[in-house]
Image: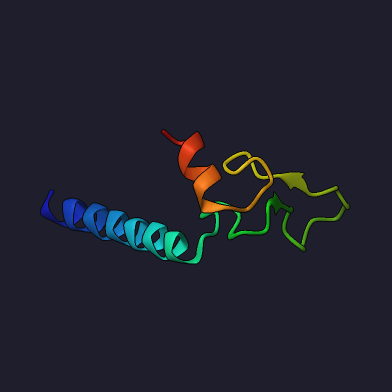
Length: 69
């Protein structure tokens, strides 16, 4: 169980660092400030990008933070 706990701690610390970095930049951590998501390039069909549900398409950290509280 010690190994699983250390892996879980590592993953959570990486997530916290990413949130902190995105807060300093003022960007949404889910869409990296783009405001939308797209599917991977190796898909065989084209789909329209859809708005980020975390920041409601704005790409700002404050909007993401308010929607996650």
